[in-house]
Length: 594
Image 1 (cartoon, helix red, strand yellow):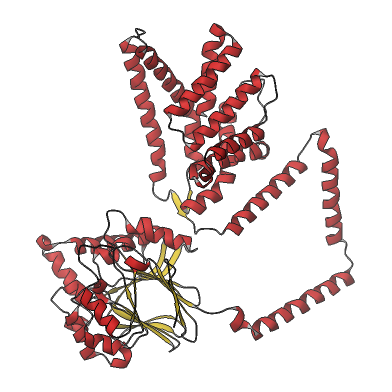
Image 2 (spheres, helix red, strand yellow):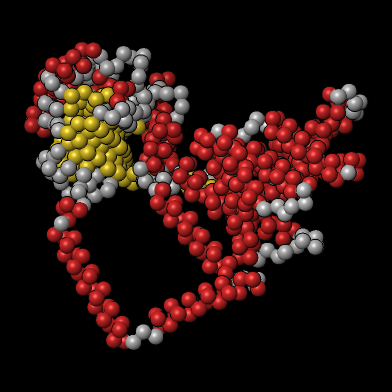
């Protein structure tokens, strides 16, 4: 649109002074200068190349073909930089333009936009035209946007409609101001009041654009969508193409396409005849064959069900910096998120957890378990609760502690603020919350459950209360696999758990090491009772706390426990089959079976 206005204004200004052909040449020069001014973005380069080709077609009296223009623009850009094909601006710019070129004609027919070449457009026709162009561009852009951003904008039609109406005057004012500024630099005496008044109008215009863009910040303005597969995107484009082609052929009035239309209608009539007038006996025989095939497939499926559908438990330790977060997919497809924090200058939930969950194909979390309310365990969870559909949340039962803090307003701290934010979201979204304590079970599905081993509400530990009363839970599956999650408990809590818990209940194949491997946790006695093969440590690279402590690492190695840590291995993915066989794979290509 920028380029169209720039060409129109330039040719209009210079046509009467220099003539039509010279005004076109000046337009090309201005387009090249404009590319420099705007910083060579992929979308501007595409539009400028297409604009120059359009002007050249006028100069050499040749018909202008938009698809050829797009192809030449893409070729020239890719020759100069082949890697720009991965640039999102490049993809969206070419995608949107192709959508308009390929789909707008058919979309215009569907929404009944009249051809107004020889008469003035009414306001309704202008609005319909903008809607048609917007829908046409979105047809191509939509799956790309979902794939890259996992969102659909609810108000895209409204924002594009408003932009389409106001952008023309704004751009005209902008170019006038730019022209006056250039003339002033070249020592032409331009009235300063003129420039100031235009500048004021321009400032108001830009503010209008900002207000329009703020529509996207309104509540419920975005729908979060799980990342589609490449096959799904290909199928989408094939389906859209078929629908548009069929509609176009069915509604064409062009005499040149009459043969194609007749063929299409004949095929349609033949299919209709085959379906409608098939004899009853033929139908019965066909149904019998289909039923026999279905029965055979069901028998084979049941015989080999265990081999066809391998029920694996997936556990993913996410790299969230200095913090803990575990994403679990159960054999029956339920999703569990245990903690989701990380001390960072940016939102862990928005930048790591949310994109991660959506990229795995999920827009809901069945269960969220929060070990305690330190930011490095709950920071990102708040975003997940806000943005996704969460079915149920479990938190440790520390009622008396929070009530005491609430009364002592001077002692309110970051953890208490997290607690308040958490319940503000929970109450607003009506998410069920269950407070858990020692002795309870969290039933997930058949033969898959959590034992709650801590906190003991009747015997809360006063020292470092939040850490030492973290929820300690043990994941059990088919009596073949066990994993212990320990939050941020320290030695005092480990000892109390040892005193009050049967050693067989503590035993687990995998241990999530407490408090990021701090020297204040993971005692020799506790490790002996748990007796893990594998230790997982959620920790940030070069963190200021010195986690994990060298003494903890040394102790784990002495006991021949394999250590995986997020600062060195990145995301740690664990797959467990129904026989309890464990496979661990990390981002840095460590792969091991147990």
